[in-house]
Length: 152
Image (cartoon, rainbow, N blue to C red):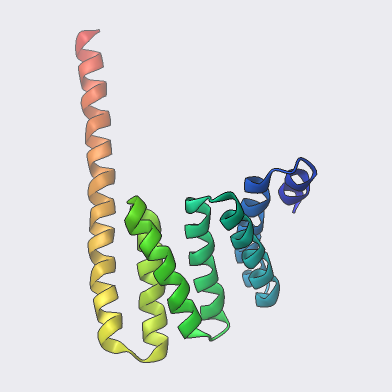
């Protein structure tokens, strides 16, 4: 809330939208889904206005979570799909994983087991990809340290 207040005072749209999007999980945890929905919809509006695609992606995924909590699986699915399309388009693997996980949970809640299985299989592949990326980064770091020590 402090971040939102300061950002609003400075007319910093990205800060306002990010603060609102960060408040949503807090409202959900406090069992206030309507407040979470209002905050995320406002965040979405600001991200649309400022054409912030990463912010839109985060807002869509957050809306998916909120609608899932409200038992509105179709709206949840719709928003997770929007998030997934943006994540694929911009190659955001972590955010893509969040979208696919949400789609999996929405499909399960709707009783669409075949679709849920497809998303679950996709989720496993994405987790493996993320682990491979992390492992490659660690190996590169180790190799760099080794080469540095060798030169010293």
